[in-house]
Image (cartoon, rainbow, N blue to C red; front, top):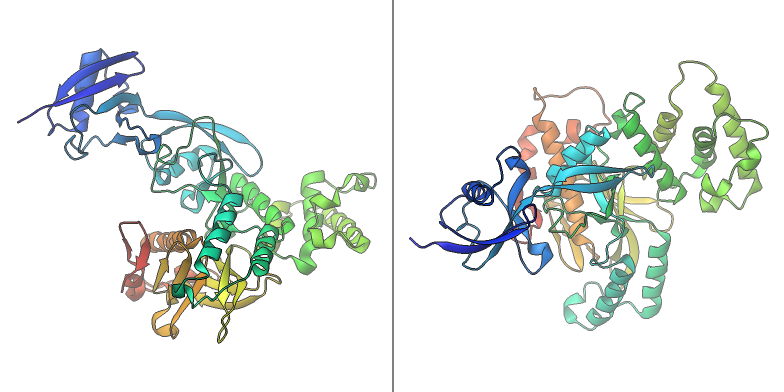
Length: 465
C-alpha cells in the first residue's frame, strides 16, 4: 500500500514539515501523529483540527476526525495545516450591542447558532440566523438589481419566456423604484446554515447581525425572557417604521408606546424632545394631528403604567404588532403574470408559519393565501419560483424572481421547525390554542409524509409524496 507525502503547517509552532501518512488513516490518527511529531500535548486536542489548504479560501475546510484521508481524495503534495478551530466571531443584535464570541469554525453555521444564541440568552436558536452587514466579495443589493435588469432585458427576446411576456424599460424602472421603497427579505444577505463561516468567507473582523428569521414561537415571548422580548420589540418597531407592516389606525398608538419605552414616562417638558421621524412611519408625518395623537397616547400609556402589575410596555407593543395582518410575514418582490394577458405586474410574495400569500405591492392588501399544508412541492430556479399545490389548485403558481432559492429555503425552514416541534409531542391529538395553526391544526400525523424533504445535488428542497 502506498503512502501520502503531505506538507504540514503549524502556525502555533511556526513550522512547516513534510510528513508521510497512510491514505487509510483516519483524520483523528493523522492529527495525533502530527502532534507527536511537532511536540504538542493532547490537553487541548479537541480545539484543533486538520485543515485542508486550497488556493481558493472558500474551498479550504476542516476534515472530519472520523473520515480517512482517502475519503477526502487527499493527494501527494497537498498541503494541510494543524490548526486551532476556535475563532472569535463578532455578533451584533438589533439593539446595536456587539458581543465577541468564540466558536468552532469547523462546524456549519446551523450548529453554531446553538452556541451563539445560548451565550446571548436565546433559547429557540432554530428561529434565528445571521445576516452579513457588509460583504465585499459577495454582490451588493445594487449590483444584484443591475444583474436582474440586464438579465431581464436579455431574456425578453427568448421564446422560452413567453409565459412571462416582456417588460419595457419604463416598467422595469418603475419596478426598481418600487423595490427601493419596499424593505423586503431580498435585501438581507442571510448566511447559509449548511456551510461553515470559512466556506462563506466570513473573516474574523467582520460583524454579523443576529436576527429572527422564523416567526414561530414568538407569541410566547414575554418579560420572563427579557433578551428575546427586547430583540423582538426592536424588530417589530423597525418593521412598523419602515412600513413593512402597515400600522394604519394603530400607528399613533404604537408611537405612544415607543415614546414611553425610549423616552421614559411622559413629562410636559419632554414632549419637545420627541423626534416624530423616529416614532412615526413616513406617511403619518405630514399631519400635525397625528403628532397630537402620539402625545395623547404617550400620556395614556404613562398613566396606565403608573399602576403596579401592568404588562411590560415592550410586550404590549409587540402584541399590537402581532395583530397586524403582515406581522411575521417575510416578503419578496416578484413579478406575476396577469391572467389572460401577456403582461407582468409587481407583486409581493409572503411566507409565514401558516401560509404562502400574494400581497398587493402598494397597499399591502392580502389577495390570496395558501396554507402550507397545501404546498406539495416547490421549484426555484435562477429566474423563477414555482409552487405546486397538487389537488388543491389546478395548475401551478409561478412568479419571476431572482430570489427563488431564498423563498424555497424559507419555506423549508418553517417545515423543518414544524416537524421538530411535532416530534416533541407525546400524544397524537392536540387541544387548545387555535392560533398555533401549523403545529396544532394542520400537520396531522397521516400527513407528515408530505413534509419529507429531499435534497438535490444543488441542495434545492422539494416535496415528495
